[in-house]
Amino acid sequence: MKNQANPWLTSNLLVLGLGMLPAALLIGALLYFTAWAFAFSFTDLALVGRKSVEWSWVGLQNFERLFTRRGFLESLWTTVIFVFFSAIVGQSVLGFLLAALLRGSQSTIRTVVEVCIMLGWLLPDIVAAFLWSATTAQTGLINQLIVVPLGFAPINFINEYALPIVTIANVWKGTAWSYLLFSAALDSVSREVVEAAKVDGATPFQRIWMVQLPIIRPHIATNMLFITIWTFTYFPLIYAMTGGGPGRQTETLAVFLYNQSFSRGNLGFGSAISVAMLVIVGLLSLVYLRMLREPK
Amino acid sequence: MESNPATSRLTAIALSFMAVIWVSPFSWLILNAFNPLSTGQLEIPRSIGLDNFALAVSGNAGRQFLNSMLIAAGTATLSVVVGISAAYPLSRLRIPGRNAFLWTLVLLRMLPSAGVLVPLYFAAQRGGLLNQFGVIIALTILNLPFTLLLLKNFFDTVPIELEEAAYVEGASLFQIVTRIVLPMSRAGIAVVWFFSFTGAWNEFLLPLIFARVQDAFPMSVGLYAAFGQQGAINYGFLTAFSIIYAAPAIGVYFLLRRNMNTGFAGVGVKG
Image 1: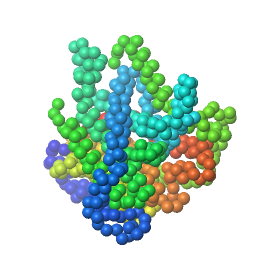
Image 2: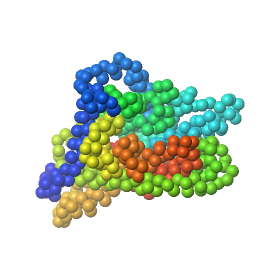
Image 3: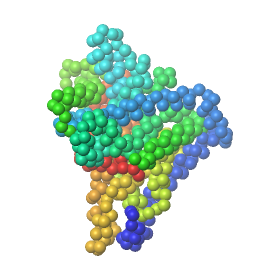
Image 4: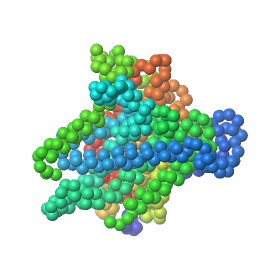
């Protein structure tokens, strides 16, 4: 990479270029489709009916509607809560704790816990939604095992605590990713550094907080970037569990976008929502990338 | 780390407890799937049998399994092949702005897929690609930015000195790539293949819109369609079908597990 004069590369530029061609074509298609989606956001295009054929340009009207009509801002707030608690607090912190604890554990425990967490992650979204709907139902596991034995009336969790339940389900589903990434990151911290800190009398907590965490900061930033963005646009689990309800309690932006575009058929407005989401995600990414770049 | 035995035992107990909580939601799935008289409630079955599984594999399920397999394996393989042939030059040639370009693509891809669904659909309709092949291409397009970034990161970690040595020994470009670069980034390729495979296996929205006929449904769409099919929901069928549907992704993970864990180290490396 540093050395430009690599003869097996320079004499085969044509072959290398040809190799990049299929990817370039597909990326071109992606850019083309994205541009198209951008263009839609300035129209009143609809999924069905007259406006699906005779659509017209409406300028910034769709973007004005984001702020003047109810829906977008409420969904944005729901999304912020959902992302903060499920991705940042839940998945990241829990994933890191597990990675740190399991490093010191016996290999059997490590394997068992790892497999258990992975099962949630590997489960298809729709099946996970079934599981959590059943577990939190009135006759489900939580009620039968905890609520009823304690003498309370069974609670219909999904109706009464929709957002917390969806958040927990997403923590359950997504922690494995953070765990794997942090686990790999901790492996890359050299043993000598940790041992040296130990010799100097650092407590286990200090060893993690002041030695290991600063070293793996780039990994933390990368992980945060990925899971924030994924959670921000995550759709199937929430949609299959609640469809955005009850009312609009769990209508995150991704669900809002889907409902507007495909249930109500407002493709133009839907595109404006996705453009707004892209802008938000872009800003968030800039923040994280700064974290990544900053010198140690 | 060698901490004292009391704390480590306490940690072990806490961790085991956690593992139990983590798998507890599966109880409903297992209890209902093996209960021929399943009602969708959480209860200990009076009899245990495989009737539900027999029901689940009869009918359309076999066909849907093959469709899912075709879409998932096809997408994963196409993504990896296209990705490798572009990521190697991207990693080795000093193309200005390539990192910024890749990151921009990845960010662009963060646009919720519902956003690009409509243009994708129109294009597929015009090209006569409203079928499995169209789904594979569409998913590959959506996967590619991420695939490229990961593969390039993995190739960056292969020391170029090895390639120089091979060149001095008279190896061709093709030999260098297939004998040195690919074997050394095997773990990374396994990770990328696995991500694409599970992503495509789980994908729901795209096949729902692309596959217009019953015969072309993958399992994700089949599962969704089975919800309302017989009027009342047949929970025994649903849970057994869910288990069959979930099995391949889990199986593939455990096959690739060793590679995966090393491969993950590369994900965190900055691009």
